[in-house]
Length: 297
Image 1 (cartoon, one colour):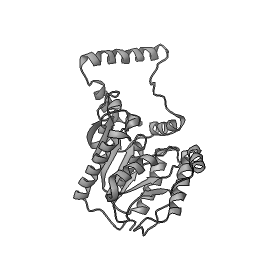
Image 2 (cartoon, rainbow, N blue to C red):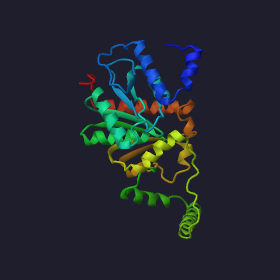
Image 3 (tube, rainbow, N blue to C red):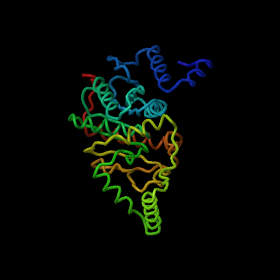
Image 4 (tube, one colour):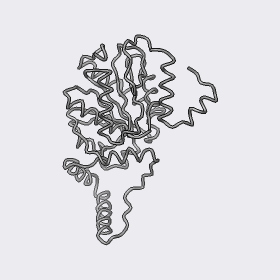
C-alpha cells in the first residue's frame, strides 16, 4: 500500500518500536496473504507469499532496534520459495534469556515442530544463536543456522571460551604477535600501577548499547550442530578469531568471508552473495529434513 508523503515523513520520525507496530497494522489492513489459514501470533511479522512454504525466522535484538528492512529485502530476493518471519521489538525484555523465552513461545505457536531455520544479522545473531540452542534443548532440529557478521566475543566468557581466546591471541606471524604481546603487557602494568587503560574505541549508538550490555551479562549456550558464519572483510581484519569466537560455542562453524564493510552487508554485491548462500543452505536443509507444511499444528 503506497503511503502519501506526509504519512511517510511521519513514519520516518517514529521510533523503531512504534514504526513496527504501525507497519504491522498496515499489513493487517492490506488483507490476509494468499493461502493463509492460520493467523500468526501477536508479535510475529510474516513476509510471506504462500502458507505452505517453509518458515525462516529472522531473529530480533534486545531493545528497540529492528531489522525489518533487511528481512523484507532478503525475503523479496529469495522469491516465493520461503516465508520469512520477523519479530516486533520488545524493549521491556532487557535480558537475552527473557527475549529468547518470548521468541521461542511465538515460534512454537506458529510452527509447533522443526526443523527450524534461523538467520541473525549483527546484534540479532546473538538471539538467533540462543534461540537455536534453546530449541535443541527441547529436542528440535535447527537447520540451517546462519549468523551474519555477528561476534560471540561479547558474551560472558565460560572456561571453554577463555581457552579458545588464549589460542586466538597467538595466531599470526611473529611480526604481529610481538607488538600484541607488548601491548598486553603494557595494559597489565598500567592496571597494576593504577593508570588508565583504553580498552575499546568502538562507538555505539545508545540503542545498541542496551543490547551489548545484555550480551555481556549473558552466558551463551552450546550449539550441537553446524552453523554458518557470513563475515565481512572489514570485521574479519579486526578480530584475532577467524570465527569471531563462535568455534568455542558450536560443534561446527563454516566461515564465508564477503567483501566490504559491516554496514554494507545488506547492500549491493554483498546482499546478493548473502541471498545466494541463504538459498543454498535452505535447499541443503530441505534435502535432508522433511519440512512441515501444516504450520502451527
